[in-house]
Image (cartoon, rainbow, N blue to C red):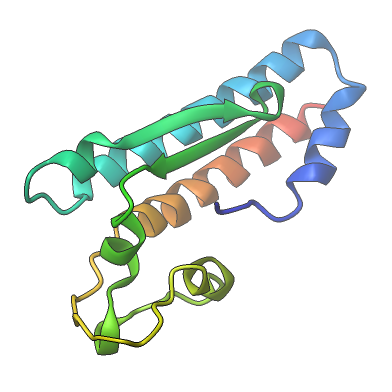
Length: 137
C-alpha cells in the first residue's frame, strides 16, 4: 500500500473544520482514488484481462483516504518486473521488497508499471487541491 506523507497532519486540520469543509476534503480524496484506479486500470497490461479486472478503489479513514489495489497474486510482478528486469521507482523499495523471490529460478519479466505512475500523477493533483482547500480556512 502506498501512503501520502503528511496526510495525518492535514487530516488533523480538518477535525476542527466545519462539516462542509470535511465533506469537500473527503470528495477530493475520493476523486483522487477513483482517478488513480481509472488510470491504473487503463494502463494495466492485458493478457487474459483478469489483472485489469482486479483493480479496485476503496475509501479509507472515514472517507478521508483511499486504497487502490490490484488483487491478483501476480500483480506486483507486473508492476515491478522479475529477475534481472526488476525496476523499482525511488521511494518504493519497502513496498517492492515484500515480493522478492527466493532466487530459485529466474523468470525475467520486464516491469510494466501502471499503478505507481497513476499514483504519482494524481498524488500531486490531490496535494494541490488540498492546498487550495486549506487556503480557504
